Length: 421
Ligand code: C5P
Image 1 (cartoon, protein in one colour):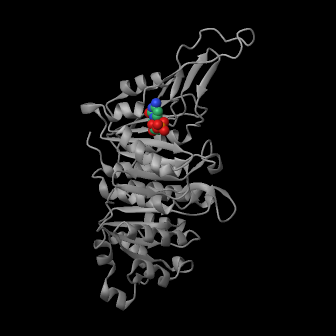
Image 2 (tube, rainbow, N blue to C red):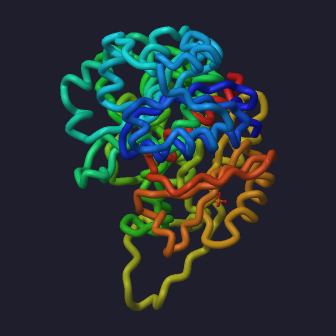
Image 3 (cartoon, rainbow, N blue to C red):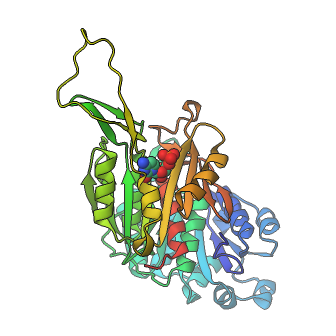
């Protein structure tokens, strides 16, 4: 999967804050994907990372001073902004967002932002109270209305010991948001009233697309009170549905029995068995993107009883099992009505990549998201996930992230693949 970042020029504006060190990783990730990165470091940013460390990673001079004659002679603020394909503000502090919202031009960062005619992506990072303060929310709404896109902030524990939204999005989430903005012809700022605090905000790379997602386990009855099922909380599938809706898609979520609230703005079709899930999926087609995150039971009891099986006289019952339909394989091979992009999951307890590659070929899908669900990994039922994207072109391994972050990054990535409907 070649990145849309190859050959692109990113101007990274780094504000201050403890998250600035993640900006260094962001530079590395962008360059790995073939982008050229030029950096502006604010005065506050310089208190957290040195121009030398930034420039060693960008392989370029770091710009810090509006009134430096050498800087202006080499590349003035107008050229800095015009020369880039995209401006990324990360970390975007409360102060920097406030100055951007006001249209101030009191340092090189804000002057460049004011002078630009390019798209701008902001990745906020600040204390949770500062983020939730009406002044910051007002500034974010103003900037969103002006067309600035946002990624994050994420929820979690903060360096200051508090918990809540305010953490800088993970570098790979920012990369995914950048890829989505560079790839998508559709860049529609959401209405400024939307008070969403996490995920991809501002960009609607999936506007007009139908995304079909399966999630949760299936329950295959043995009798009216017993069933066979796989362990699955449905969290990853629900997070994907939420991220796809935030990215502007029309979302159909076909879900087995789970204890989760359906995400806002998503059409939920609740099912119990694999056969019902297949039926619901087929009824929901056509779709532009189909993501099969459900843990479908492979087998069902051949003739499930209509009465509860009693212990006792008959001894231990034995059951004949029959194989369930493979929903992913069926849809992957569906001919003309096949979604432009079909994504499967492979939850494995060993040899994750070997099995994932085999599954990619056998099921005929375009991408397998593989993860290790061995008990030691804590993925099953947990909030975090470490995934590998396995496509015919190769394997990409993402760092350990929470399931929301995986969902946001994955949806942004799928949007860059821009499926034909
Ligand atoms: O073969 P396995 O169950 O490991 O494959 C996992 C992938 O296939 C997941 O994407 C899952 O949702 C999908 N699947 C399916 N129908 C089945 C079995 C698996 O859609 N009957």
